[in-house]
Image (cartoon, rainbow, N blue to C red):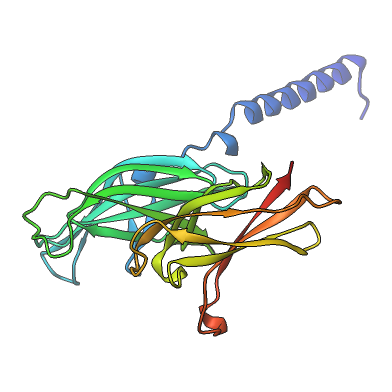
Length: 282
């Protein structure tokens, strides 16, 4: 079969059109970076049960064949930020759930961004008939602020006591963070004296304090100190802490590690816990 010059030109033109068309489709088509988190249509796990929201609502029978329904709603208070240190913008939100009784339970959830879209996490209970306030993501932690009642107050009382939950992703699950470090931030430049602050669960303390350790780039301890509770520490709830470490700047290496270590007077390994952040010496 012989190709004339005209046929060859037509073939080249058709090929060029196809290439350009494909490039336009790819350019105008959806990109992963343009995928938007939509908490109203996410799938979450609440008390071991998968809940799929459609336009912010899920209604399923409380038991097979039952007329009573477990109603889960998207409440709102959206937040955005990186929760699992992968450089992608994740999201957080608050849901409410009612099984037909007087209780309305509120939960915090997250949506983790993946290469194929967003994946909902398990839900963390905030409380029954609370009053959600604000939600944000900071330093890789989902912070949920809400008002609750004091212990012993009836549910007829309006929630008036401010509380916060600090939630992090651990092993792919949304969990309460035992400690939230407000200062210094990871990667901060520090000098002596170094002041630290944040909130931590009460069990981290022993006699109202827990250890702080500062090491150089090679892991050598250059200073130690203690963070002290700024309130009642014999509680399972969060307690504010502050502390100060005085140190001499290492002669070599600008990078160091600041370790926040749970006080463990028992010495049992199962009771150990710690958090580390990288700092740079000025």
